[in-house]
Length: 171
Ligand SMILES: [Zn+2]
Image 1 (tube, helix red, strand yellow):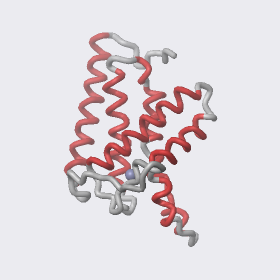
Image 2 (spheres, rainbow, N blue to C red):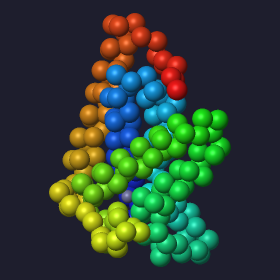
Image 3 (cartoon, rainbow, N blue to C red):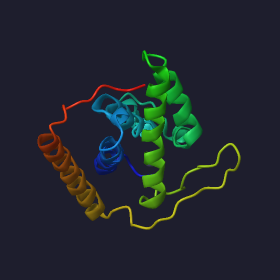
Image 4 (cartoon, rainbow, N blue to C red):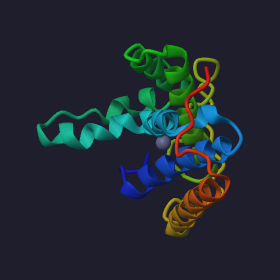
């Protein structure tokens, strides 16, 4: 498991944003409110890293990290969080999209040590592809740049097509 380095939080948030922002070019459902939900969802699998706070008061949650870093737990958390939203289905959908983008990135990019139990409860088989070494900050830089470019492209398209900044959600 990586030690809660800030850059991967940024990468996870950016990737969720990227996926939603690109889809928003075609689908109004991926508006900024829902994109924000996906960005929150992208942090759920690593929520246990908040233990940095708990460790200050002597509570060690490290042993629970694998429990949180599996899709089924993230989906359950997404379910609970979505209860606080008026449109629970949409909230759940976007939190889950975010969480999935997290696991996709982790399995592609980050060596998180023991890997992930992606297929729990069906299998305890740990999984990751290790395509890029964990300390490769170029990927962070690349994703930040890409996010910025897509953001600019969005602004440019809105300007020239005269699309209102945030189309209403169609559900
Ligand atoms: Zn992770």
